[in-house]
Amino acid sequence: MKVGIIMGSDSDLPVMRKATEILNSLGVTCETTVVSAHRTPMRMVDYATKAHGRGIKVIIAGAGGAAHLPGMVASITQVPVIGVPIKSSNSIDGWDSILSILQMPNGIPVATVALNGAKNAGLLAARIIATANPDLYSKLENYQEELKSEVLAKAERVEKEMK
Figure 1: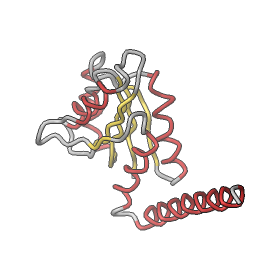
Figure 2: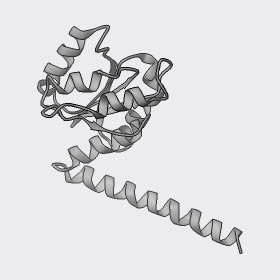
Figure 3: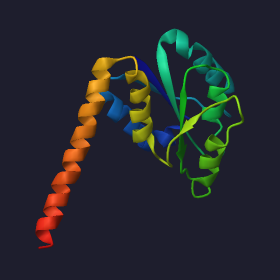
Figure 4: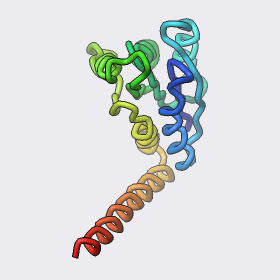
C-alpha cells in the first residue's frame, strides 16, 4: 500500500506535509515529490503513467493557482486521484484552485478536499486503501475513536467551566 503525494511547487510543502504526517501515523507508506503540470509536463506524464506499476494505490495532488495538476494526472492514470486546492501566492483567495480541481469534465474523476485540506486527503487515501486492508481499517476506526474522545473531553471541560 503506497500513496503518491505530488505538488506543483515546493512552496506547497507546508500544506502537503499534513498528508504525509497522517499517512505515516497510520503506517501507510508514501512518497512525496514535486511535479509541475506546466513547468515539467513530461515528468507529470511519466509519474502518472508509471504510478500503478510502481504500486501506487492513490495519488494526492496538491496545486495552487490554475491547479491543473490533479486533473491532468487523473486524465492519464486509472489510479484514484485526490486533489488538494492550495491557496498560493498567486491565488485568488484559493477559489481559482478550488474550481480548477472541482470542475472536472465527465469521465475524469478527481476527489476534491477543502482548501489546504491535505490532512483530509491523506485520510481519504487511507480509507480508499482500507477497503482492502483490515489492519488499516482498524487503525482508522481507532483514529475516529480518538477524535471522539478528544471532543468529549473538551465538552466536559467547557461544561464544567460554564457552571
